[in-house]
Image (cartoon, one colour):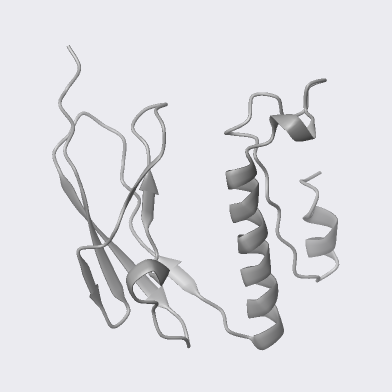
Length: 132
């Protein structure tokens, strides 16, 4: 048993699955209708799909390597390092990857890297004040 893409993967086909489950409380309910979709989120899903299909068709694969930020009581600022393995050069200015994050169940925020060199991006995740 698996997701919609499972049977394709089992037969050796490349497959991706894109879902809005975590950002849409209407998923798999009677109210799961077009007018309940986040169009900006769905636009990003379409862009991601196009990138995946393009990379599969041209054998230009990209690997993103990083150490996940662990949840815990340490709320100090963190430096996050992203290593990108790709036959293509990193974008510049608006085309360079951003880091999206959220605190607890809040809204997503994003950061631009403060360092970009060769295959490495560095992001400064701001510290958080403990809640009282």
